[in-house]
Image 1: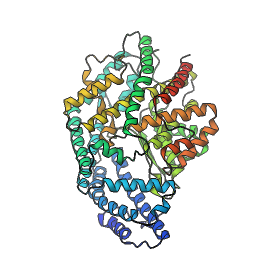
Image 2 (image 1 turned 45 degrees about the horizontal axis):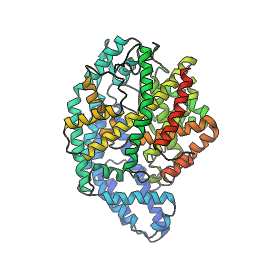
Image 3 (image 1 turned 90 degrees about the vertical axis):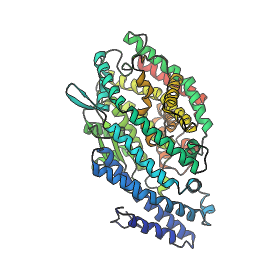
Image 4 (image 1 turned 60 degrees about the horizontal axis):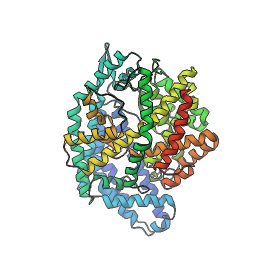
Length: 565
């Protein structure tokens, strides 16, 4: 319910936005209560503007071929966002000049908010407004390019998520044929995506230099508010993954190859069931996926089920894969509505079930934190946001019989999930290490970038996949990672949160009710406590060192053995 913003306000013109911004700038703040009300009004405006942009983005990604939707989004990022930036800087200055800041900052929630605001002030440069606008426009091109990537197979036009299902087919000739169609289609866009990424790197480096930073890595660590860990911690994480996780994945690859009767796997062998069983197909369409997930969430915790039911009733989901739809999946928090939106590309596969419960975890987080008084308190660091979603993947596993009547299929699904949890960690380390190199070497050529990517593949790879004849696939496999193009440096968070999620699951294996209560208590905090404190509330230690990794790897290893027996 809007209290400050007019109910008819729809952000259709800059002047309508400016009226509110000017009022906030000009309003006298003579008392502490006046300042606190000003913070609430500012927060309401932020929520309204963010949700307005969110709906433009959601509609555009649902149908990238709809020019009206694309234009509506472009209008916001080119006509509204650039003009917002100077006002936001002035509002931040006004806020930080108030005498009540020190008193309010005794509350951890306000301390975190004011700290982030001060960082924004430190990084703000007027000359970066136009660059940020260009970056937003350019990164939009990635979804437009990849959203049009489809293949023709047996008379059908398939999106990439739909085509990927064939990589689980027991028939190797089918897997190989579809794999070649996929990679050759992606190859068509290789040069275009390389050029796009080079432009993005160049512009991002300039943003960093303008803000007085040595490089974009330094800039982004500040901009992302990474106050609770350092660049060195990330580099240590890379090493820990290399030492603890890669050997376990090599074991998994060796077992896969042995069962397939091969010395090494081909790139189309990694997803197939080695015993020749058909791919898991837990549901036929998005509607069935949603209904099963609601039942599952209800059993885990009735509040979780209520969240998804509310979203279903309000039309806050778009689940099925279809032509023209942008790739990937997301949960978009809508701070004014208090109801998030789930977008994904379901094609009937087991990984789609995992995506659904992952995004459902984000959605539950949005509902649990929506009553917090300021929008800033609900704007989550990814290390916390992804803890919610990745934990939900693991917490629901024992309820996947809502989708699998066969005990054998259920066992396979759980085993696949645990293996995927392990397998994604080196990929996360690779993507993160790649970004560290990219942005500390901003003048690199495409050839140097490719060489670095290949060297990281050697570092974090198992040597068990034979790409002979398909070397070009390895060279540009990073093109599939949306984060590199659209949200730079946002990826290590998945690794940190995955370790936390394994901790939540480990706790749940011992005492599920207590683990769920601690999980919910942590999510309710939003971002009103430090990341280590939020993890502590979830009964976790915020630690992603080699020793923690070693303990969790041993735990997963024992769980995998149970599914292998």
